[in-house]
Length: 317
Image 1: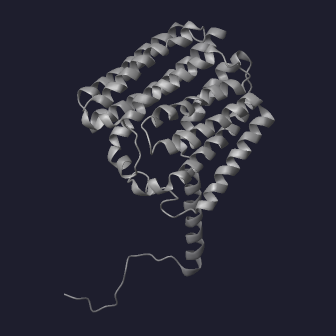
Image 2 (image 1 turned 180 degrees about the vertical axis):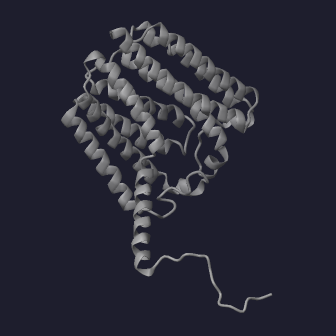
Image 3 (image 1 turned 135 degrees about the horizontal axis):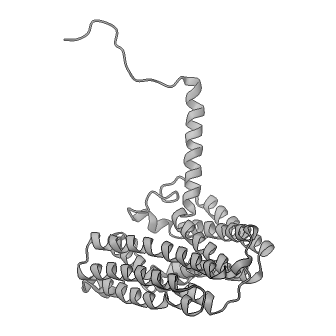
């Protein structure tokens, strides 16, 4: 039966005078979110955590909040630059992959010129900040990190799976940058931090490359060796090799006196957990076991660095 009365609606409409300001506010929020996305915030935050650990270990008992914040600020701007310029360089490939098609550039929400401006301005400000407040060793090492990431690793992904190895170098440098910013020498202790980060990345990124292999293939990126497609289990086997190497290298800070037995015990337990995850992935290549490697990696590194820092300062007391 149809109603004979006036048609009513429960939908509340926004008064016309308020509609335009609300729309403008929403547009501004979206734009700010897009600018934040240029920095690849999850990667940048993880990198800055390792910078902080490197700074605290490099400074020993004589660190200051001001120095730590200056290091984080300058290196953080360099991280923004690397994220923005990487997305500019990979904008065409990103548009072909499901996982990256909604990034600001391929989605058309930001223009190429403004992304370049953000990238180069952040790089200049970050390096300038570090030159002003830290030392030239930190400036040079940060610049080298940017060049390796943007000038070597990013273009190499289209040509060879060796890009993963090359990319692991700038990926492992953040704790060394923090160490140098604190005035630490480029010695075996700094090298031990680099080695841990360098090896930790391989099982992590091999699992990502396996999970996203179809996307990467569409974009023409060679993130896995060609043999991995023909030999099931090869990706997991490589992960096992790196996890084993990481287990051994993780003991290095203890041998150098950078930490004590509490750290060594944690390194063994966490390293074995990471190793078990890679073995499970090798035994049964699947989305579930590949994600298991990722989860194990994201538990391993933060806990390892936290115990390393705590045990270092415990020994200083």
